[in-house]
Length: 355
Image 1 (tube, rainbow, N blue to C red):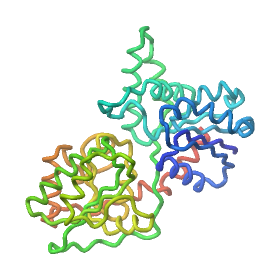
Image 2 (image 1 turned 45 degrees about the vertical axis):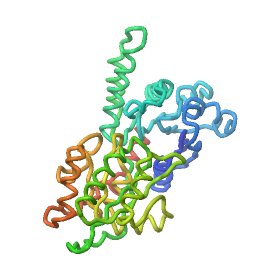
Image 3 (image 1 turned 30 degrees about the vertical axis):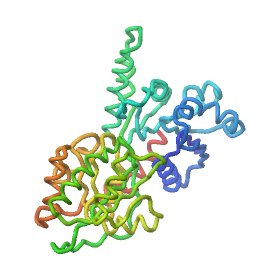
Image 4 (image 1 turned 60 degrees about the vertical axis):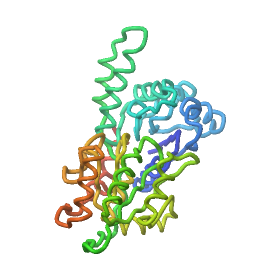
């Protein structure tokens, strides 16, 4: 089977998914075309032109399957290379443009939303990394299309799209050994990890506000703030680096080995995000033995039992963290992550390619 894998905006999680998928299904003959994750507005609208000008010979070949991420303008690409339309066309949604919280200084991404819709409609089969991703896409597209000047009959096409969709999470690698249970002693400060992008949509304000309050109350803890940092980060990070200096054991992006070591030493991994479609960073830390503490919204209710969730408010996060940090009996057991790992999903992905 010859598969053309197209990734139009190769962010870290997208690259991991593509590389691990190719490694897991070695019997497939893969051809990968990927574009760097920069200049978003240009990239999501211009990817067919970029590939036409740079990869014309590759795209002129015959493939059995075209597998594209949702940022690929698949409809336009098929128009430029009509023979690709005869291949089985699959689209994978890591995220969708309808569920992003928009800040006041952002221009609404109308073009990006239209690309999502056209690409999904051009596909034979569509997969989403979570039910929340699928549902927010369908509902977001319905509300968005109602704004068009004509009263278009969108219900049936969106219902048909849902019918040919399925949920396929991005699996994490299986660990060769289970993490050892962490012996928790009340005299040892518990280590809290933040390993998310340093951007407003991950809601660092709530996270640090709660840690400021815990520190002011004299609750002992250690803090490792990891994750991807950009040229401009929310101002709260600079404030937190100063106010929580006595708690900090790691700050900023780390080399891969050091990052894994910090995760292995973590007791609690926290999310306060306003936007998450699956949350690989939380899954990765959980697999290595940290207790996940996630808000009761977005994709999390489908992935984490209630004892690992809080109500999504600062007050709820403070109450749960304070209990976990001061009372060992309040902490749940380590979460089993085997259902998230590649062995549980390899055959399902193989069958999806044959859909």
